[in-house]
Image 1 (cartoon, rainbow, N blue to C red):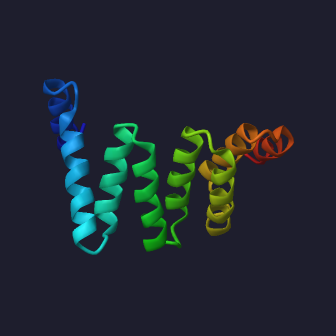
Image 2: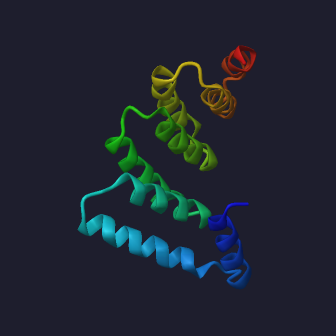
Length: 133
């Protein structure tokens, strides 16, 4: 295990409520409002929101990442995953179409597309995605 994960595990052990995540989120939101958005800060903010199951703020952070890095298929995938978690498969499908155009050979994108199609009530489309991998 790398040293950073050992430190995080130790923090989680001593702080089972993980109050530090709320502080991290507030700090990153404040810095994002005061300064020009950066990818690193937005990824950190999105992760802090996801760990706290704060879907709406995670979506906002990931939407900003999409605007900053529109050529990165995985940013679309992360946002679509959050939409799937929030039971919004149609919004996820739109993002996944863009992500597949950017990276058509990605197995992860095909899998997420299959899940989004299944959750969206389209089992035939889901089956076609499942067959492609």
